[in-house]
Length: 130
Image 1 (cartoon, rainbow, N blue to C red):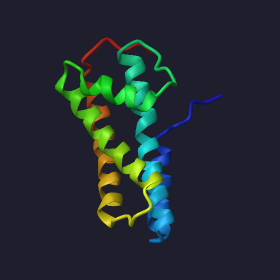
Image 2: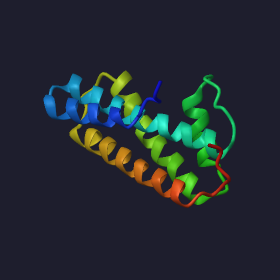
Image 3: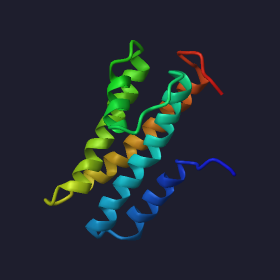
Image 4: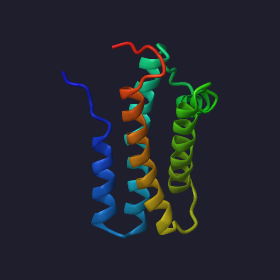
């Protein structure tokens, strides 16, 4: 059985974003952008910190661990994921109008997170487990 590629959710987010400008599609695209990043960031954490992330409040736990890292690169990653999570929470839970820039920024945050992760794997800050 092959491992799921979380980045495929980025493509789903793009599909939803491009398919319709209806707010429901736009809100859903933000959620897909977030989860396309959460999975790979969690995998990075588990490989580089050599710990399994508990499912209890995993999202904020992961973000806080990274934001409080002694490494600036991980702090930036945590902040970027936090910003994307705030957009996802807005899209999922707030009923007032979603502005176009929230969708645009969410897509941009996801792309930046992918680049940050690529750089962290190319230039590891810690010993990685396979």
